[in-house]
Length: 253
Image (cartoon, rainbow, N blue to C red; front, side, top):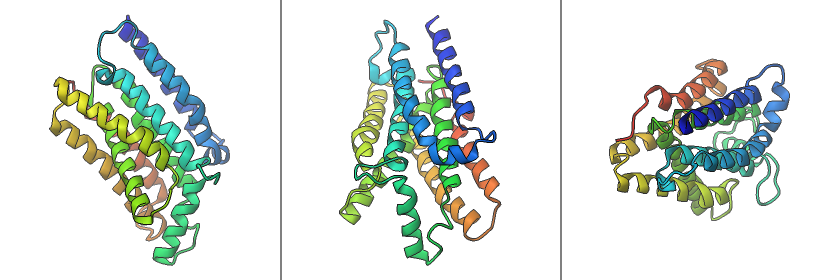
């Protein structure tokens, strides 16, 4: 019964997620406000995650369903700092930062490469897909949750490295330090210690997260700078990459 309730809750969230981001005539609203939708979903995910435990005696860090909910909620909170308003009060901050960086490095039009449409599909397409499918696949399958932790670990490390090199705060750094790195590392540590996941499976999950970031930037330049692929193919690739961990399901050991 517990698993049935978890599946119904996860499926309901998936349907809500699809209704929230699929472009059905509300494209202009979505590209400007998708992160606000995520901010309202995040506390619901946290509540649903702890509600899914019931009277379970499983240590919470090895409860794959709970962690899948928490990982996804953490990413939604992180996207608020990155794309809604950061700790310095800047609105849609990463959009401006990355475009200014690209313009400086490549001498391109400041806002001609990373579009708000692109940011929407990167986050609501690849990341939300990965997170919600990890919830839906748990607790039977562990790899989607490992992959979600992997992309958080890679992203968190990138924020920290950026801060060290620039000796400055960047949008998303606070949630990377408070949520991304601790939660992903503790999750991996607990699974290795309990024998629920191998180091090899975790390495593959982190590699998936790293390649996802490579696809993100390589596809961005391929589509918006060099015109090698249609931008629609780029967006579809992002969504496919988000779904890939669920397509190669692995059971806990």
